[in-house]
Length: 270
Image (cartoon, rainbow, N blue to C red):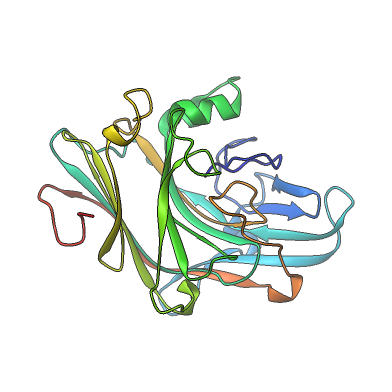
């Protein structure tokens, strides 16, 4: 599920990887100035109840490209870029969050290969393919009761966002934004696998056998990103058209952990 500033089918960085708000006018998404960090603009803050809040907003008036209105939201990344399971071990990535409601919103946490931060003059889409991507969770406003897990690499083209994966639902039709849910990925090496869970219930497991030797890039160091993306063109399904009356809307983080795991635990096998 790549994202580009130019509105193509990805989420690849275009002007750097500093955490900060991203803006979107009616003409397509574009990155905010790196000198305007999200905490200073109020898009990234604590909510007073112990949660980190990532807020998406709409501002009436002319946008940066002359179109009407400007959408803004927070995008944050880990400073560390060396996350990778040790051989024979595993990393457990867990996020307990309440996603932001609203048509046009794409709430996501994902990992990118570290070389994407150091691509130099390489084409951003080619660098993204080479780095690979692991989507811990992606919740889209057009399917409020569904969450997607996926990977992206040169050999994974099974879903519209140039990746491989699948969704699960809350089961009762309730929106994931109605309350906090726990999204988990267990990333194993030797033997290699990725297993996704929602609230302890595994719903997807991928291994190198599901793609090709060239397609399994998930044995290299990564960094993690968390964002609310507005009007994304690059998810597994389109998130819908943003409705200015639905803003502001916020994603709340109760906890987010990345920890070593050596033995399988309940909820890590599909």
